[in-house]
Image 1 (cartoon, rainbow, N blue to C red):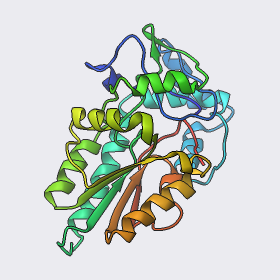
Image 2 (image 1 turned 135 degrees about the horizontal axis):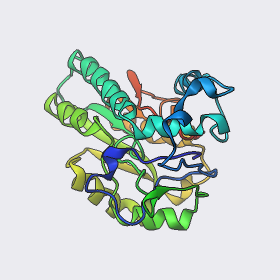
Image 3 (image 1 turned 30 degrees about the vertical axis):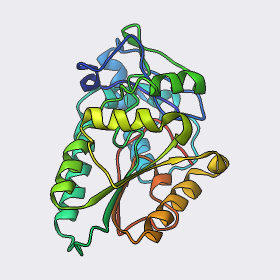
Length: 263
């Protein structure tokens, strides 16, 4: 992952002295929260950062390593302000509008898939340190320590969508790249603790899948879901690699995430 700034709503009753994010293969570049309003003026940048973010979300810009220097403040402002939360809720609303129109078979095999990291649970607090935001290289040991706390808050709008899907009688399947051996119990706890109280399947990565790319891994896990007789009506993730590959589902929905790119 490349860049992370903690949105203000994540600070409410969730922040501890330190906080975290998911398996980031690259350095993260963070914005200092005291940046001035002038710093957020895109017109002063040599790159149109709003267009850059649009290209990222549309997957027109791929395999990027870090947020361009001139857009780090812009992305920080996006995450700190209301827009990120608003965008998440808007995508969740679109997913619900679609879900309401699906004619479920009703045999208990109508499934909706969610990614976990930064789709249902946010790792943003990992990067909030000493009342500021600071650059941090991804450290797998530190990140696992954060995950084992089970303190990740829900991504805005997604818990509400989850509850509405349950009311419509969709069966929820979580597919995550988290490690099966060390993180299953705490992931179950964290999901339930923020309100994701029930699901059909929670699929994590085991040791035999360590070398798979994210697209390969997600495709494999979805194939297992389909082999069990489930119909994947909806599929939501924050990365395009959550949504590409085999058995992506009848409709896919991408949660906004301009801070990092995972293949």
